Length: 411
Image (cartoon, rainbow, N blue to C red; front, side, top):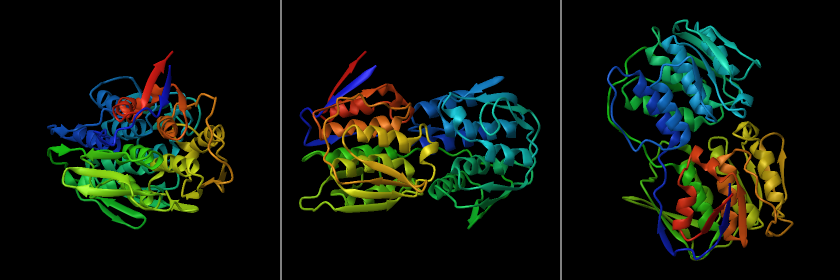
């Protein structure tokens, strides 16, 4: 399937009901599964990753297939190890290329008895069914915060709790802070002190929880406003006081001409009445890599030289996101480079042009969404495999259509 996106007649004001935060939803699902009596979860994400995790947590299987979900697989791995399940955990071909060794090593230190089925360091893995003990583990924080969050979520249920020592540069710290905040809401103690995380043994409390709207999904509406003329977008349920590190996008986009107004019911975004685009833009995405694709396209489409830093794991997402964006932006005459393993550089020495190529998505939802919004600047964008957006934002193209973009699907 392909999606053809044209600019159409964009509405001057449109209200978009964003999906619920996938990151928060997945954390709450694990906690809910660890409760003796489940508690109501309001506004659970409809993203494929979350729906798969929800289904697997309610199943007793010999093989658990996490699909494309990195968080799904890693959280499920820690959960099954805690429960003493003898099973195999696997995932899609792309997920089997993503690292899992730091989590496996930590769980094995706690007594899990996990082995690799095929390639060392990657899924699938086989769990022996051994019971976990609490204690101390050391985890490298440079690869993914998901390993750390997975351990944190099961820590209160361990007989002796858990003390985690982090080594290396701690990437995506806001996600660790998100995990701590959600756990604390459910009544357990979490002490984060520099490179030490201490979680004593305890019990989660069964409390109702409402999941907030997703700031990473909001990044595409910031992109839409930045690249279009006169569109104002209202985002109910999106608030400044958020658990999500991606909320920093409102600060970054202010420099790119989009103003944010926080209201009681949510957030309103629009272009500033007077502004000058910068000749040069830089921002650190160490704690918020998922909003980098939208900002990369905003800069590239508007001929802004940019250095997007802190993207050490950009090659370890659903795709090699650095290479994917480089290839696809180049087809629109936007030249980029990925420097030093962590900086995505955009050059302003060429003008945006319409591409006759179909945009490849590389099975990456964020590549599909950020590239789709180029339709606001060129006549038409054609996206291959648009269904990949179901991973995090199933209604993305429906919402684009409601905003006035011309969206057509073809085989």
